[in-house]
Image 1 (cartoon, rainbow, N blue to C red):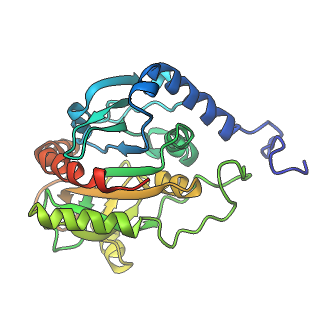
Image 2 (image 1 turned 60 degrees about the horizontal axis):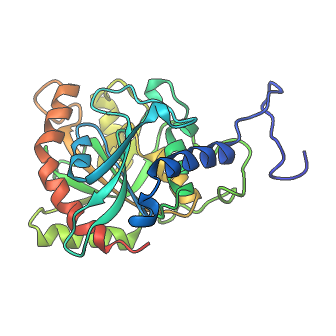
Length: 300
């Protein structure tokens, strides 16, 4: 095969998944479902992906159209508790006027049995729909001792310890370059907006580095000591494959973590997923307030 866009083959001689074609098919399916909304309200230029316990943000959208992941061609299905597994398109009320948003109500993870490519695939679809900015939220364990449970932290950088990358394999230049730059994986301009609006709202936002592991087991105290030594402030099981795919396709990225628990060895109680979901629900109001201030200022 000589052309970069020729059909690629894996080591077993089987044709590989055509990521571009599948993303395009899925995007056209969603756009068709939107129907007359495309003419009346325009297409979403900003997408928001919601983490564990934070999915209720989608309830703030007006006149929503919700599509289960399972109905969208080639879309992976979310099975984790606290992830509804729906793509919701609707109008988000803001002082400057309603914004049309695409909201991922939940996401998929590698610990569910998905590959990094599959975890990142929804971002490919959003980009083919015309989205130019991606706002990610997640539930994370707090490593930095300055954080408290329920804190919101703007991610400034990440450490990928998931042992894989969604760009591994033949590169399709229709999606992005072979070697995308990750110097500013998280937009400095978007981070400044979030921190400024957080101060204005009295939220006392922090910035921090997010370490991504595969899970699903929570980290051991020894692993947390290691992560702190290498510069991590937060730890979680998502986000990084989506960020890599987004930057590969030229999307601007903002990511905000909710510290739903202190990481192993730093708290006084056992870590449970119920605690994660409960804390996410408790901070939902703060997150909606912050996004309402930040989203209208994101230029796409």
